[in-house]
Each structure stands twice: as structure tokens, then as C-alpha cells.
Amino acid sequence: MKEKKKEKILVADDEKDLARAIGMILKYSNYEVDIVENGKQALKKAKENNYDAMILDIMMPEMDGIQALKEMRKNHIKTPILFLTAKSQVDDKVEGLDAGANDYLTKPFDQKELLARVRTLMRIKEEGKEKYRIGNLVFNKENSEISSEKASLHLNHKECEVMEFLVNNQERTIDKQELEKRVWANEEKNENIVTMYIAFLQDKFSALGANIRINDKNGYVLEKIV
Image (cartoon, rainbow, N blue to C red; front, side):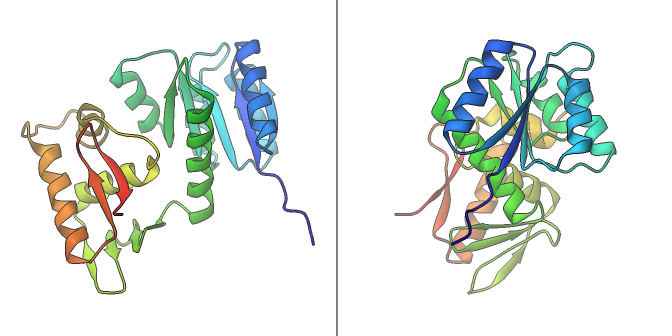
């Protein structure tokens, strides 16, 4: 039987000890890893290689992670990307997501959480950025639609953005402030806007006979109904 090709990840961080530790964690989990020290090197590597995922620190010399990512997206490099940041402010994380990142992780982080985020990136790559399967539902971003064997329903623009963000972050709980910043940014909004749109999606899940729901006890996370 032919051995499965290892998934390849680029790690860019100027903290050499941390970069080395991340590399060891990923290699132990059977990923192939390249490590660079700044955004300029990361951009060069991204142009030369076909990576399955990238992990970029935001604060790096010569070219920071956000600028490197912007340049990658300009060059049509669509590789799923996780940002590492020592910053805790929501606005800084949102800036990275708006630049085209798929997820972020705040330092210091747990090894298990890092690997969970990497698995999420791999799902994004495998499924494509337009179509996702979650439980017995299919979310088609291109058509703004969720469907089951029972039926299909259209999502409006904001419902689609909320759904995409939850799908891309299935292994962690999203707090209300983060979701509001990500989807509505500086738009004028009702203070209950997030709660309203979560309820809209829950109603559509129910109408489609979905075996998933949005758990909203301590934030928001997609989960299967047991």
C-alpha cells in the first residue's frame, strides 16, 4: 500500500526556541515542517512551495506576519493560515483575520490547542473554502446556502459570515465580542445583533433536521447533538 504523503506546514516566528518547539510538536504529529524567522522569508518560501498550512507570528522583523499574508493573498496563495500573537486585544486579532488569516492563537498556548487549530486548517484545505460538511448539513458559501437531505435554505450575507466563522473554528468557543467584531466590525448595530443571528441559524438548523447546534452557554461553538 502506498504511504500517504505527509502534509507540509510552514512556521514563521523570530522566537527561535518557540519556532523550534512548534516544529518538534508538528513533526511528532507526522507533519513535514519548514521554519523561517521573518515575514520576508515566509513570503519567499510560500511562493516556492505548495504548503498545506502556514503558522505565522504577527510581530516579526523585516516584514510582519500581516504584511506577509497580504502579499501572499495578492499573489493568489490561498493556503490556510494560523496567526500567532502575543497580543490579547480583540482588535489585533480581527486585523489578522481581515487580512486573510483563517484563525489565530494567542501565546502562550497549549500543545493540544495548537494541534487542534492545525487540524482545522487541514479541514479547510481539504474541503475547499466554499463548501463544508458539518454533521448532516452542507454549508455552501458560494451559494450562501445550507442544506440537508431534507431541504436547503438560503442564508443572508451576515448569516453566511457568522456560519463561516463558526465552521472554521469548530474546535474552540467563540465569545460574543469576537464574533461581533469579526462580522460587523465598525458597522452600526443593535447590542443584541449576535444573539439574533445565532437564533436565526438555530431556527434554520431545526427546519433542516440538523444533527448539529450552536452551543451558546459560554460563548458560541458548533457541536453535534448527542
